[in-house]
Length: 46
Image (cartoon, rainbow, N blue to C red; front, side, top):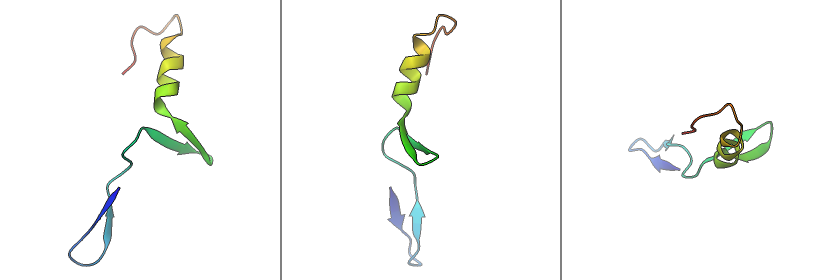
């Protein structure tokens, strides 16, 4: 997501979803959180 500034530049505001790109692969952060939450040593994920 971004917006036009008065000087004509575009300001990058970030993504509007919970994906990140790691080494060219799009990763859903919720999938990582769910996987970690299933581990016996993890008490809580946020």
